[in-house]
Image (cartoon, rainbow, N blue to C red; front, side, top):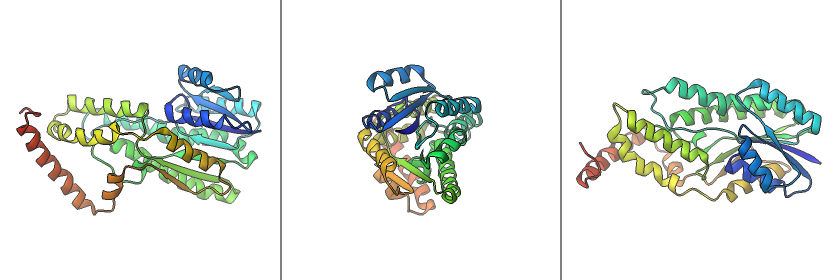
Length: 287
């Protein structure tokens, strides 16, 4: 029997990965999440090879307790999939940016570090692998008001590369997944953050009103989660996995990424200026 730990399993994407993997009778999956309700719903959709595990990745003690439970039940871990995370939109100079960043880093980055540190002896025992969810935001240039999330994903990229190069000496694989836009609870978190900035901003109300339709394009056209599930399964089953798997990255963000920074900066400002005039003329923006 092979054993996997998948964090964030109470959510849509990680939960879908659990649902897919549990169809293989060779695997038992520890489905971990802070949401007991989410795990209960997942358990009802799956089978006896899915073991719900309450896990708060912001707590070292919770991570260590989860690792102890896995060791008692399975004794090893063949795969760890770190999919848990949060998202919000925020200004870098307004609002509670320090608290926002601290919370996001604590979960998106340090949570991953805590989980991997706690279960590492079990992974080493199995000769297993670690799969970390990054994002297209981890390699693309940050978009306005999405920088807090991008900061955490840039850190995940660096952490994963460093971990891969370290565990390479122990013949253990470490893989990065870089998803694009998929329909998850993170979309709701991002939209709520955007609305919060719009309601409280002193400097950016016109900018935010113009950029919102652009931001909403990817949000309103998310990809089917089956593509991400297939990508994660490839990273689990591959005998020699790639170091990095991109999955449905947003084409227009990828297209502008190689453009020199000053041109992109000018482009954003130019688009906002033109967009503001057009929206004002159409009566969609009041003075």
